[in-house]
Each structure stands twice: as C-alpha cells, then as structure tokens.
Amino acid sequence: MWDRAHIVFEPICNNEQALHGKVTLLNLQEVNVLFIYGLCDSRVKKQLWNDIIFCANHFKKTPWTLLWDFNVTKFSHEHSNSWRVTKSMEEFYCAIRSAELDDLKSTDLKFTWNNMRSGTVAISKKLDRALGNWQWFKLFGDSYAHTYNPGILDHSPLSIQLMQQVQSSGRPFKFLNFWADHLDFLNIVRHEWAKTYEGPPLRKFQLKLKGLKFHLKKLSTRPDMLTADLRQMLKKVQLDLDDKPEDVQQTGDSAQE
Image (cartoon, rainbow, N blue to C red; front, side, top):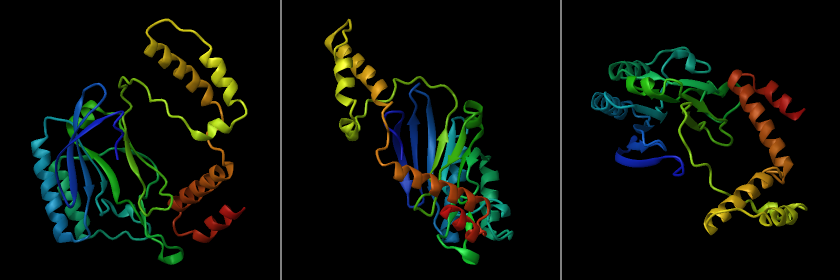
C-alpha cells in the first residue's frame, strides 16, 4: 500500500472500516492519513461518518487526507446509469461538509468501480476518492489523486501524487533477471566495472552500480512484448468503458481490430 523507500507509515488506530496513521515524508514532513473501506450496511456506515467528523476536529491543525473506498457516491453523476440521490449519499455529503473536507483534484478515470458485467446490466460508479482538510490543501495545494486502470479488479487503484518537490536519495538498484540473457549484457558489465573512481571502496562500488544501472535501463524492460501490447489493449478498452460504460459491444469490437 505504501513504499517504505519513500515514506514511513506509523499506524495509530484501526477498525473494520478504517486504518489511521501518521506518515513521515522524505523531507521529515508529517501528515495524517486515513485509509477507508466503507461497509455496505448503511447503519454501520453512519459510525464511519461520525468517526471522520471526530477525527476532522482532532486534526484541524495538521495536514490530513482520506482515501480509498467510501462505498458510496457523492453526486448523482458519479453513477453510470442512475441520477437518483439516495439517503446514503446525503449522509455522506453531510459528513464531508461537517468535517470541512474537499476532494483532491483527480486524473484519468471518472469511475472507480464496476460490477464486472456487460450490456444493460453493466454498472460503474465512483466509490473511491481522496479528500483533504484545509491544512492539507494549504501545504499540498498542487497534489492530486490518480485513478489507475483496474485490470482484472472491480476497483481501480488510487494514489495521491505530491507535486511539491521532496528531496530523495533516488530509487535503489533493482536487477531484472532477463537482462542477463541480453547479448550486450556482459560487454556492458565489463565496460562499467573497468572504470576507476576515487573514494572509499563502498563509494566506488555505488558509482559503478549507478553507471551500470544507467546502461541496463536502456535495454528492453519487458522481454515479452506481447504482454505489453495486451496491457495497452486492456487499457484502451477500460478507458473506452469509463467514457461510455453502456456501449459494451462497440468497445469489444474496437479491441478485436
């Protein structure tokens, strides 16, 4: 759920509908994050709304964001084939207003859940979202939530992107096994390992790995290009479905071309 190379997450409390914790970023900035998994039972969900309002008052002076599956839409247009405003939607909207929370800007898909069916029974909704309090927007005003293609899942993965520059030590070197089968692999290793650097032995080793990483990344990153093509086709189909979830037949025909 989070990358330990970029953030430190310290759980504070949790229940069946939420996991609350403190996140420390690379620049040592601390923020509070609440991961949501709203249950279907509207009576149980009311407790979640009460918890959110309580936490909102507690974290008024610190950056706080909430994300993931609220299991309810906020507006009627967030449902692919229904404009009805339900009581559950009204309660959710009132809770957000009381907690003084607002949606982060979002990119890519407008629907985040689908019932995995086709034709007239296909349904898509925006059940997953990211919210922030006033302190969050004050510190990360340029942050946004990105919705990824669901692939074989019914829910789309969601992440929060921070545009604010956070100093990073770089990503660790990760060796991909199929590189060793490439015709240029041994020549690249010999060339980089023959270079000389100044400094302690560990520093020399790090610089050699850095040079090696630069050249290895130029090699093909996916030996099975058919897989890459299929992923692109799946992405196109899901983007088309997100735009017109009711037009399943046309989407299927375009994928076969």
